[in-house]
Each structure stands twice: as structure tokens, then as C-alpha cells.
Image (cartoon, rainbow, N blue to C red; front, side, top):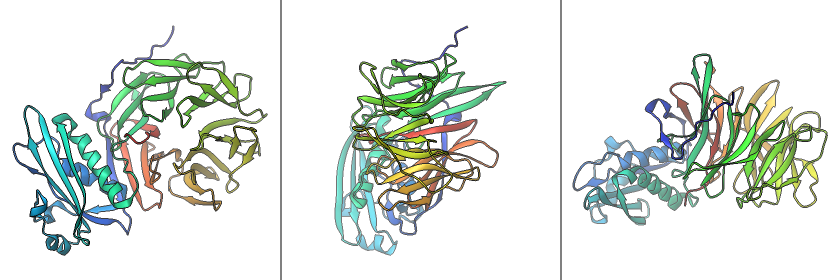
Length: 427
């Protein structure tokens, strides 16, 4: 009997048991102290504490050290209320402040300011028209703007995560493909299945996800529209249909197919589903990843005897080996600037996440697990998320800053979480 896959045309918000809980471990010694003052609320209380969301966002990045709210003796609502001397004594390099005014119904106006204490000047001023339901998104947006104004690179607090959960139900597992905010808040179920779901991959506009499903017993690749829930079957050839990755322009998918008997890398045109074979080798070629310019593909191959990362130019389709250090290197994720590869690096059956710096051919370990997998770069290149296991064997996600000094654990209260993929920047 054909197995059924439950797919809804609209997202279903999950209960609190499916919420990812975050703990922050460590922080950069150079983290910038910042005072995030509670917004002065002129009319009525807000269900979402926007200032707390902003503080938590900045702390998770490892680049900022928000002051304890108990130390914030002043509560400026405007520039006229700001006393730089107070914040200098408290050790803040920056201070953010503002107020919330309710208009009518659930509409409100959030006025926000960011100032440099040392320079005694304003760096950022925003006025956001929001409603109650947009308060959390508004706080993430403000945190993004703070991050960019001070560090000069975009924040990723308004981005999304895609991941797969596996929850035991009797003798079986229930698998779900989930989309949530970058802080794990508001998980929404995109796909539910009794069979495994794998390899979610975002389109560059953040509107679609490609993934692998085993609902028919054999692997198949689908592309699903997040707003409508409609999905398109891309491949279901006999054998392996795996590891889809959207091209930077969103018009193609790089995949691994074994339809000729051996796993090879192919490119699928998203619109007409036409195929172009990229590799042709007796080895196992899998896990393609696009270079940021879309002109080449990285992939995992055992053509040298053990799995290593290779790169092929899409013009001449000649493959060259990229990694040489270690017995095993696989599942590459490329940083937005193309300078780094995050990968699974293995020796003696111990698998950690490593960063490979392409210009210098140097490799740095950034995880300390023994079975870490599926790395995914944040769209600003500042963090890498991957799947790991705790002492009990439960699957969880970990986000680690590229300097290795800050990590966040994202844990599901019941069940396992795996296969993370970070969305593009949400503009």
C-alpha cells in the first residue's frame, strides 16, 4: 500500500514540545559591551519583550556582550534623555534605546536609536510601523541593523532555519521537515512523513525548499513552495536521488543520481527538469555544493581511495582535488565569500567540523564532537551550524562562530533534530 505523506498547503505551527531551546556557551574575549535599554512603552504592555529578543540575538552572535538589564539604571526614550557619562561608567561601548507608541487597534510605532558612547554620537535611527504579531520580527530586524551598523556586515537574526526532526512513536519514527526562526522560535511543519526526510536546501530567494523524501520507498527529490505548500517532483529515478542544492541564481539544482548505476553529479533545470551530467567516473560522487559565483561545483568523491572534496569547473568539467589533510573530508558548505569550506573532517572514525581556508590551504577544527555532520554556513559567514549528538546520543544542532569561541546548542525537548540548513538573508 502506498505510504502517505502529510503535506499542508499552509504551515502548521507546532506546540511548545517542538520548540528548539537554545543555550549559549562561551563568548569572544573581544565581545563588545552594549546596553540594550528596555523600550519605553507609552500606552500598554506588549506581549513580546522586544528588548530581550534583541539582547538574546546579540549575545548568541558572540560578537556582543549585552549588559545585565538590572544594571541599566537609566531608561532613555529619546536623544534628549541620553546621558553618555552614565553609560561610560557602566562600561558600555554602545547603547540602544527607544520607545513604543500604540496608534489604534494593534498597530504601534517603534522608535529606535543606537549611539556610540565613546564617540558620543548617534549611529542609527529607525521608526518601524508594526502590529503586535510583528513585534518579534521587528526586534530581529533591529538586532540585524545594530550588528551591521557596528560590525559592517549583515546580521542574520531575521533569517530562518530548515531542519529535520525525528520523534519516536511506538516502534517507528515520525519525521518532520521544520522551518523556524534563526533563534529556534516559531517552528512550523512543512512536511510530515513516516519515512526519512533529508537534505533540505533553500532557494536563494528564501521562498522554496528542495529536499529528499523516501515516501515511495525509494528516494525522490522535491521542491516545495513555502507560501502555498505546493510541491514539484524533480527526480525519482531508480537508485539514489540525493543531496539537492539550489544554484546561486535559483534556476538549477545540483544533485547526486545513480540512475546509470553509479552515483554521479548532475544539474537539473528547475523549470523544465532537463538534466546535464557533470561527473562521469567509476567512483561515488555525491554532495554537490555551488561556488558563490555559480561557475563551479564542489562535491565529495572517493576517487582517490577515501572520501575527499573535489571541485569541477562547469565549463570543462575537469575535477581537481581540494582537500588532502585527514582520512575523510565530506559534505562541503561554502562561505558566502568563497574563501572557506566548512566540512566533515574524519580521522580514526571520529568526525568533527572543520574550516578549510582555501587561499592558504589550512584547516581548523571548530567542533569537539565525535560524530558531527551536515555543516551549513550562516549567510553572513560568521557562524556554522551543524548536527551533533549529546552524551545520551540525542541529536541536536550546534551553531559555532568561525573563530570557535562561541557556540549555541539548539535542542529539541523530545526527539532528535538533524540536517540543518541556514536560509539566505531575508531582505
